[in-house]
Length: 82
Image (cartoon, rainbow, N blue to C red):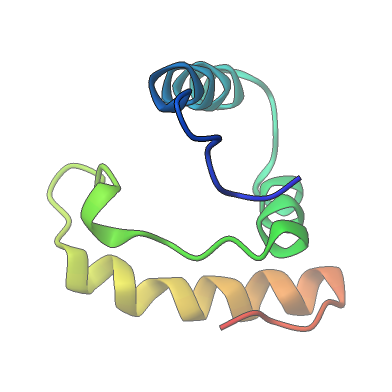
C-alpha cells in the first residue's frame, strides 16, 4: 500500500482519510503507537495541510517535531526518521 491516492478516486480517498483520522483522534491510541505507524509508513509532514494546535505557529511545530521524534525513538528503541 502506497501513500498516494488512486486517480479518479481522490474525493473518496480524502473522505476515507478524514474519517480514519477522526476515529484515531477519538480512540485511546497512544503516541508511541501512532509514531510507529508514521515510521513504518515513512510519513513526512505536509506542513501546509496540517491543522496546528491553537496558538502555535508552523515554525514552532517544525522545531518541536525532531525533538519529539528523538524522544519517542529513544523510548521505543527505534532509529529516528528525520
